[in-house]
Length: 82
Image 1 (cartoon, rainbow, N blue to C red):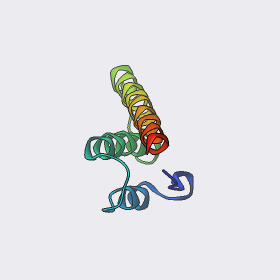
Image 2: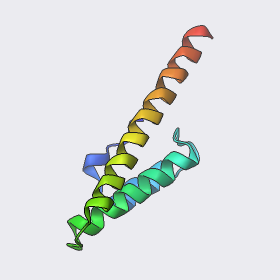
Image 3: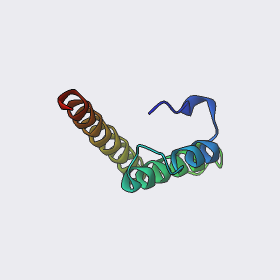
């Protein structure tokens, strides 16, 4: 998606992926925002996360990767057949 995520704080990253020309669906943007917000709370606010919360975060990350990877594959196939 060509967004330099590792070079931006979460609010700036989320602002960029929420632009009108974003390739991410609304569901994927919300999923990513939720995941990153949870991670920031643990990382910066030193909030303790339960095992369940950690497992849910891992599940969200996996869901995002699988779904967006499939979307990328479908887009590539559409371009090839056009």
